[in-house]
Length: 205
Image (cartoon, rainbow, N blue to C red; front, side):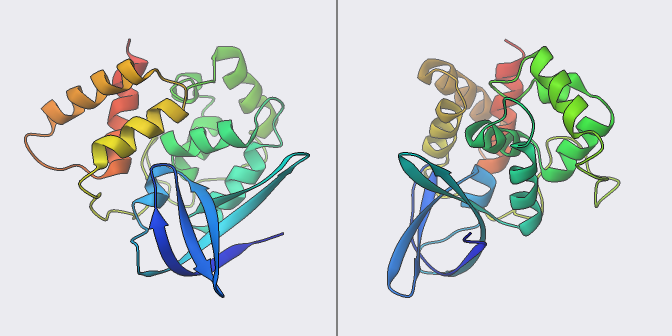
């Protein structure tokens, strides 16, 4: 198993990045929070999880080992695959998920595209005693870790592709992004904050 990558960021796309290690560029799929920490040309360490399928090998990257560990644990719940696990971590931080599961907060879990009420109840039932307690007791739902670098000028594109990858239509994504931009007061939001705000707006539809 590839536990982490330690190298130079060769490029950052809308849903992943390429990290060069020993002359080999490895593509990792990441949440918007993680992508916001990666800058082309800079050194980075990314915790990784390799998902093996009959027809593919997919590497997922995370800003912290804890996020990677939660990603893998989420997939032990019935019906949760890597895409849905990544979507859960795009909406909630690891501690946010721990708090949601511990509090049996179905509403918080159904904010994730692809999780309905029954699916949320199943996740709670199967993971309640396995996710552990939040490392930060004061952490709220949907709050990321200390990954607060400003997004690139293409934050709208990054949020749009993130929403589409999470299951929303391009039209809904654009409408939510426009609403987030209107609320920003002219400030440029970071990708993670904008994505969470857009998801909150979409969940109210």
